[in-house]
Image (tube, rainbow, N blue to C red):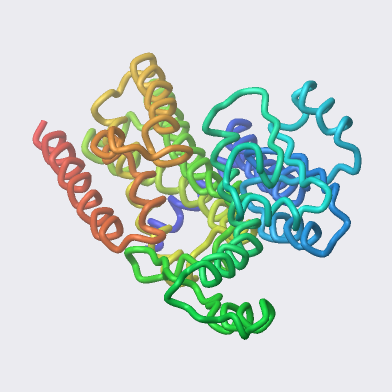
Length: 379
């Protein structure tokens, strides 16, 4: 044990003399600062919508408030002047302009009486009719619906011959509608692990990729350590060590590098608030460290040539970003992404199945590494 600790100390000490390793460590606070700045910025949003409220009544203000208070993926900017908003649309500073007309209550009543394009409630201006600007219209509809639905209710019960409400005023009839309005959530969202996915404990969507990016950086660190090991071998650093023993030193080198960088990665996850419970986070991180170490060590043992290994590491780094669920996660990616340890680390946050898979992945890589070690021991 003491010998192992001495080896770990010496290998760690060497790492901090490597400029590449120091640069990778410095990248982590840079990433934290960048993502923190993005999430703190008012410009957070996939779509920018300009809202022009020409209505001076409480209805217009309530509609705007309903939109802006729950904004997550959409950034709303309020404009007092419609021409200024349209000018910014022309300059592509905003993606769409929504205009609430004067006397919006009258517009709503007119639409209820005769639903048609002529009796529209709100004006929408766009430059391109694409999915990006059409999907947010669901929120505009949801904001206007509570005011229009009440009028539809009144119209229906007044015109329906099954109801005899001639002696009741509209206020009294409408009171029945308000009494039965249920604002409770119809759905409960949760992850496979059983943790809740409600808005209160969801992190800002803009920081979601940070876990994947940090995982890629960790694997790159493992690759870099493997390159250091190959270079040391070429210089004859381990010439007195048996071939089988060098495999163990390679594993120790990668493990030391990954755990040293991993400490910063682990802390970053909590700093940015993209963590799960402390116990679960510690478990998935520990498994990830071992899997990355095994992954990089097995590759180094199979491709023990600097030129080949560098080319392979570069290709795999690019594939990680494209295939692993860092930015996108489509069905076509599901099978090939299982090759990389990042997949299990990212998905294990909310999936017990992937957490179980990560142990299977560890067992497979351990078996491959054991076969490599035994083969070299015989030679």
